[in-house]
Length: 135
Image (tube, rainbow, N blue to C red; front, side, top):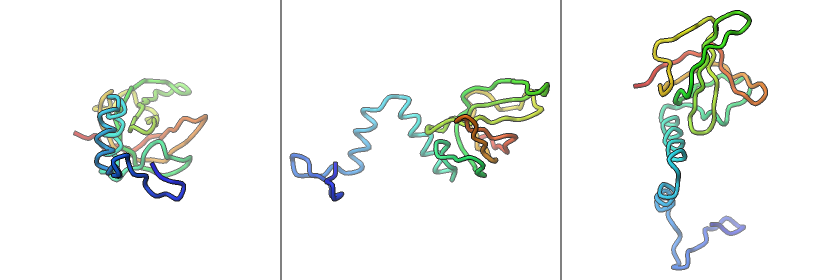
């Protein structure tokens, strides 16, 4: 807690909880999904990637995350492979036009993808992204 001026408020024992102690309490009280999201965001930062939740329209970005699902969805008669990438902060749909299958792109795969983001109706999409599958 902080005062309106921004100074930390001491606990009843007179001590201010350290950042380390707060992280321990956070991990003890968090759900499994929250812990996974935190872990993915840390990995994303280590890779030097942007968080998906903060992406804006028409930005050239590199993102990191896990593939949640993969679907084959034809668009205008052309086969289109779509994968949803999750990094703990949000989702982005990766779309490969003219593809039915890409080796290694499957649910649970971890990858780094680069491309220009298109935001339409609140859905972030990257068309024909460059990607690098992670071990």
